[in-house]
Image (cartoon, rainbow, N blue to C red; front, side):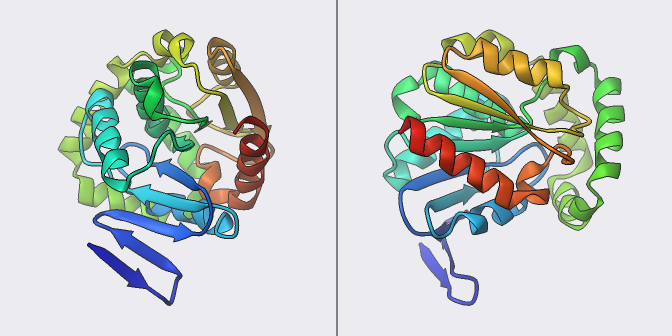
Length: 234
């Protein structure tokens, strides 16, 4: 059912927020959070793109990729460009590797999981370090993490660490832009550059003075990078 929120220029199709006008772009959130923290980027794109920002429910990367594929079908979107942050990047890579005919170009913002930081202890420490660099995200993150639930989060985190995007990226035939915040505590520069190298049509860019959620803390910069990339590859 389509709901219209005129005050914000935001619509909703089920649990998918829809903003803007123009060609489609789908934005996919990370672990434990909703699509709300992607809205700053969607709003920065309203003049150029129709942004679809869903809330995905499934726990594993594979299940979320399948959930996303079903959503694209319901929305009638064929090979749209896809932008993901954190676990959302793993979801996009999984879908692109298995269903190349369903996806367009990929923008991977802070792609997890860094193979050099694959233990739960390493990830917990990295998340804390990154959080201190992104305190503005705290109100959104705390609310979403509470709604997701701590036990569910821990189970999903374990499953997330078992996923290996480094094995899937060589099978992604779509153009790929890997975006890393210069101060990303979860994703090292070496891994982000390697992720871009592993993708047959990948490239890497770093956003200065930003941490993991570039989509929330530097939406205008990410919007510009996204538009420039899509203009070149679409």
